[in-house]
Image (tube, rainbow, N blue to C red; front, side):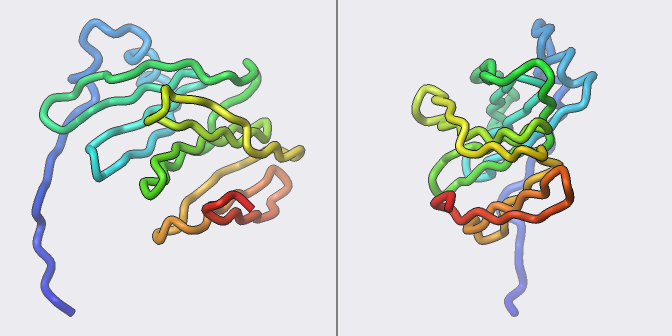
Length: 147
């Protein structure tokens, strides 16, 4: 195995992005779910039905603040960004799996509804399989084409 070397390293505090943005400040104080696109240094922060998209390349900059079309009783349990097809998947406790396309005006689509709810989601390292744990502790897998 070859020796690996770090080509790029950056540490940023999210508090830098709070300046003058009350909604983000409130979201950071609450339970948040986040994921990132390491190719573009973009962070996706999900709090309730609020989605914040932060660019962290040079300085932290809020690119987008978007409302997710979801009921008030839903709380986020996971978010995964599929960098191969540039799609963000957000899972909610009430069972909704929402597909968001950042490159296309943040279009939203509910691609699955699990009646017993969703506890968590995780994308496989090769970005081929999305794993969901349902409210009744069953494990479901979805391929990258969502079958």
